[in-house]
Image 1 (cartoon, each protein chain N blue to C red):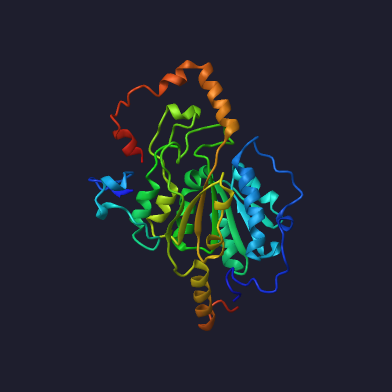
Image 2 (cartoon, each protein chain N blue to C red):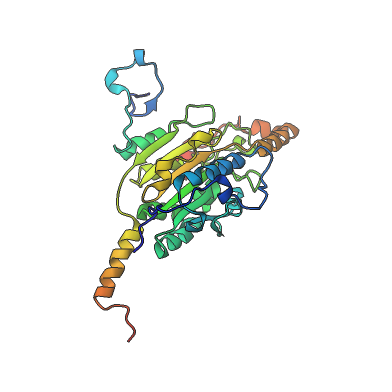
Length: 81
Length: 244
């Protein structure tokens, strides 16, 4: 797979491609590449990417809520009046 | 606070039977949902998380039946709102291992915004989306991820471009986005997606042979449907972009 002239991904023979245009997918890299890979096929008979598109380690909603709740309790919020 | 989805210590050896309910799965003959169900039931014991610490939450559609077939806690929610329900469950009890089972109609159409915000917040849930690119339970209305060429009746009328869900999720810097083929049991799902933090999306492509057979029969019996696709797009293709 290579990056074509218009920036779109296309399937091509390695021998016919500029080595710098051949796509190397990094799941931790640019999300725009994951987007382009997901758009590769427009029908069931076209090549379809399978596997991990994007991976990112970041805090979860539950962790943030727990921190906020602890902070609120330490400030005395939520106690019965 | 209990550790989020990670405490698997002291768990007895689990088997597929521990996650299989006494309900008989009922989908159309040959539906890919059977393979996905078998894969998940066979995969869950490998995680070492006991059924009573696991919750499957579904929306509406063929995929919604999934919760009845898993011998875990379950919640068959309302259309498109499974991510919202799961957000509440996962936030109230972080020790639970929360899965959302949804379809492309449930997740990408009526539940599109709930899905986006669950991903944006990186809620600690696992989203398993069955993608047949059609409203199977409604026998084939146009759907957000339809790409055409599958023999569906609606293939002859393309309304807008497909949403391409992994791209939508991946480009927005979500936690973890992956796609698998439901016919390849080894691909669906995988351990890293099932045990990681945050809200991984796992889109599973699947076939609907029974509906496709019905749709093809309809097309054959109504020649107008067979020729509809040959009509030129009056907008010259621009209409699809506007609808996108």
